[in-house]
Image 1 (spheres, rainbow, N blue to C red):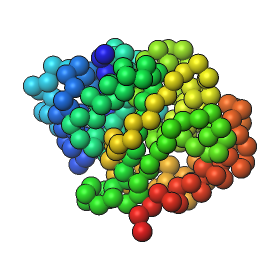
Image 2: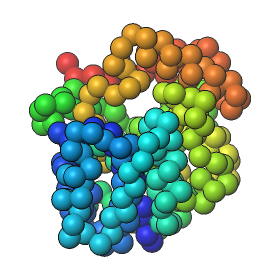
Image 3: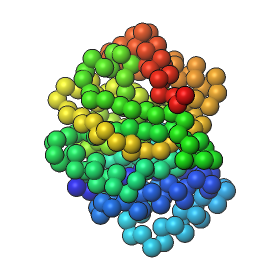
Image 4: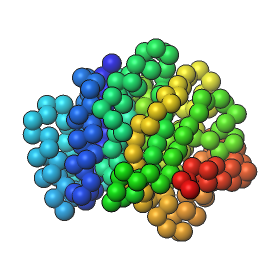
Length: 249
């Protein structure tokens, strides 16, 4: 199975090297690496070209976009793999065997999607774990309890994007949650939980970097659960409360 990994970048010169190296060093042999750069002005594109000069499996697109979800949609459009996943430019895969184990799960469990665990880490010290997002086996009732898998750990068959569309650009922060609800509410799909840390994410993402963004995220979450008929105000409340236990003490 061919795996397309998509990285969207914009002025990420300080973090893109660790991100790319975590993908290019994977033990799984059949990876297509699609990098969508939003016309960076800080040397990111030059760093990408330098790091990928000896890699034949890297596709680079650099052009203006309408934000992160537009860039991810472009990545999906440019991907040719059987499976699609994302590694954001500030993040990195936890070890070199992540993709091999994900593909093995697809094959063993005849899965349509595979997801795992995620560590939030300090931006300048990625060895320091701030928050541990440990997931669980999926059951449909979890959606109404505000549950979702960590999106950066979710790998799905490309055909799910062909059937259910791309990320909805009307959402500025919660388009990933909306897409997850769209596919996880379908009873004919099989989603498998791989109990291992797949991604290390540096803290400071768009959804939680300011009070304004947190409020907007909450509003978009509510809109997503209502439009997908997967919950109500309580669902969004439980979704936010569930994060508390993930923080390290």
